[in-house]
Length: 100
Image (cartoon, rainbow, N blue to C red):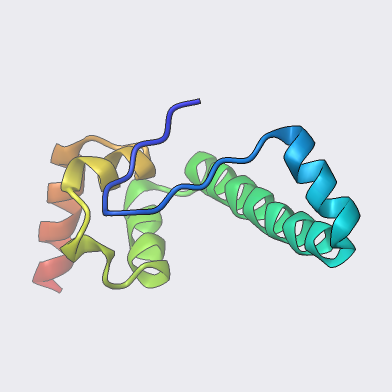
């Protein structure tokens, strides 16, 4: 697995065995992580379905609504990649959106 951070971050690593031991010691932690994983999976599914069903402009508008300040800290090519479009398409959508 490769993880690329676009901002400074702290990454923690735990083995599967270590995680299982932790869950046995603290059962509430297992519930917490399961709920977090379910939420992440639901968000991932929503993103995939949106990318299949919505035009690029609508995906962009939903993106900036969900993450209103992210454009100041994330490079355009990362945003374009996330949306499944080219950087040129992203620039065009932004220009059209700015005219309104």
